[in-house]
Length: 301
Image (cartoon, rainbow, N blue to C red; front, side, top):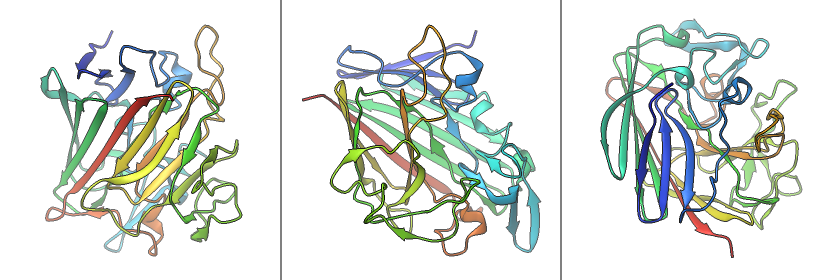
C-alpha cells in the first residue's frame, strides 16, 4: 500500500498519496471529508483528487504542432487525448522532496517524449495549509519548447445541491466530443451564467473564461456553497473547468455516485494547443510554468 502524508493547520487537515500527487481527504475543523475518495479503480479512472497533465483536459485528434513539427499524444477518448492519456501525471509516483507539519512538496520528472510531447520536464507541486486555506503552487521547467497546462482534480462534496458563483462573462461551447468549438460565447442567457449564483446544470463539463492570460497573482475565481461548508477558490489561471460529476461511478459501500461531487479545475483553456485565439500554453527553457491556486473553506452558514 502506498504511504500517505498528512499536513495540518489549526483549521485544516489534508491527506495525500504520492501516486498522482493525489489529495485523499480534506477536513475543516475536524469535520467530514469535503472531497470524494475511494480506492476503487473506477473512481481512480475518474481522476479523483489527482493532478492531471502535462496537458489537462482534451486535445483534438491528440495532435500538437510545435515549431512546424507534429507530435502525437495518446488517444484515450475516441480520437481525443484526455488529460494526456493513460500515462499522464495522474498515474505517476511523485517524489516527496520536502515535508513539514503544514507543507508537502512533491516532484516529478517527465523524460523527452513522455505523453507524446517533447522536452525533459520537471514538475513541482507544493501544498501548504494555513488556517482555513490550502494553497497549491505548481512549477514546471523544460529543456525544449513544450505545452504545459496542469490542473488539480478533486471532487468537492460540500453537501447540496451546491451553489456556484463565478464572475465569468464568457464560456467555451463544446461539440459532441466535448471539445471546444473555438467560439468564445457570452454566458448571458445560458445555463452557464453563474454570476448571481446557481446550482450546476447536470450537463456541464465546460470551461468558464476568467481572463485572456494567466494572472501574476491569484484572484477570486469562484465560490461554491453547500450545506456542509463553503469554498472560495483563488487562482492565477485564465480558465475554470466546471464538471457536474455526471460520469462518476456508482460504487456500493461508498458515498460515490453520479453527481455526488463536482470538479472545479482552475486551468488553461482546453485544446489551447490547437486554438491560436486561446491563451497560449507553450513553455520554453526561458519561460517556465507556474500556477498558484488557493482553496479557502468555511463552515456553512
